[in-house]
Image (cartoon, rainbow, N blue to C red; front, side, top):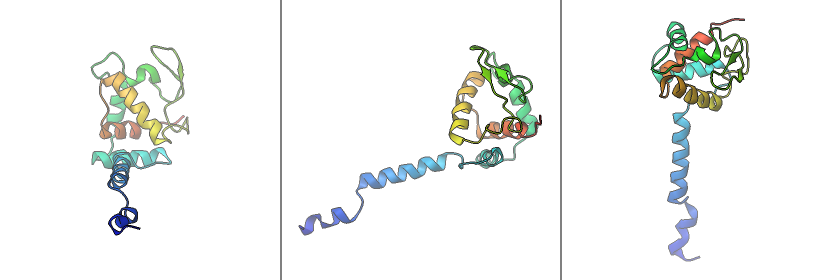
Length: 143
């Protein structure tokens, strides 16, 4: 082997190192992978740098935020029951984890729905503090 090219094969290329670094950074930007709604809540609280408030979460859920809809418009005033999408009339399963154990167990789905629903309700993404507050309130609800 030509000594000039010997180091090329010994060390990862710059592109490979860059891709690996970007992958690590993207993982750090997401909430920690959660197996339970409580773990997801802890991740949002840590991102917010403050404790979550169930009272603020309830207010966020029931109030409008510059648009016509609130969270309750589709999810219902009692998120322990099935809701109905305001535009499509499609049934929406209960939001409260105590009633619907599959809720808030997949971080990718949670982020997808927060992104969509916050745009529908507030015309922006929700902050980590708002997500934590909403989760804190939903975790207090019982069937």
